[in-house]
Amino acid sequence: SKPMLAPGMPATMQSLSRLIVTVLFVNTLQIAMGALRVSQAMADAAIRQDAALHNEMRSMMDDDDDVDGGKFIQLGNGADSGSEASYMHDSAASLSSALGPRWVGSELEADANEKTNTLLKGIAGHQALGTLNRMLGALP
Image (cartoon, rainbow, N blue to C red; front, side, top):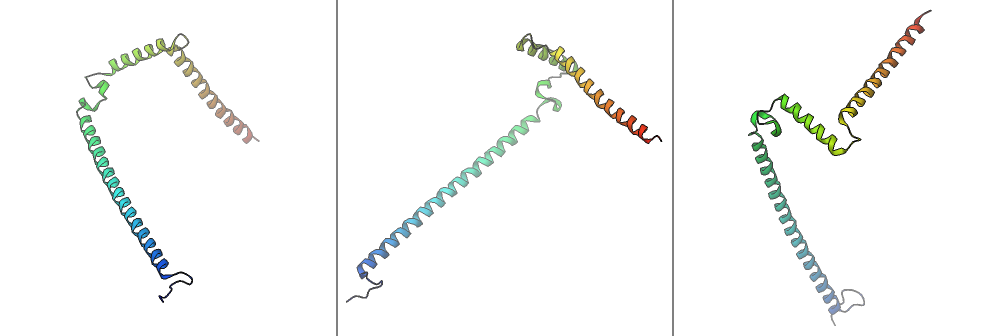
């Protein structure tokens, strides 16, 4: 009679078990190798995409050198501070008209400046009051 490798299990069953384990192992190896191939392909694609992005950025930076005198593109055609002030004024006026009657840029700017100055004076006044209190506290 054939020797039994596991108690109570015939040799043919053990052979079948070994065959199943071997098939599963080989199948697992094939899946792992496929995953490695996919991972390598993805890594290669990422490297190519990264290189393309670097080339595109380099090209854009080279294009920036063409701007006249290193100024902004909007100001690159010999624009000076007078035309910039005119542009800012026109822009503010068009914003005010687009936002309606409750938005008057010049009035809002004046109000903001007034309130900022009041706040700063209040802070300075508080400091002055603290200085006076310290001076009076130093008197005998």
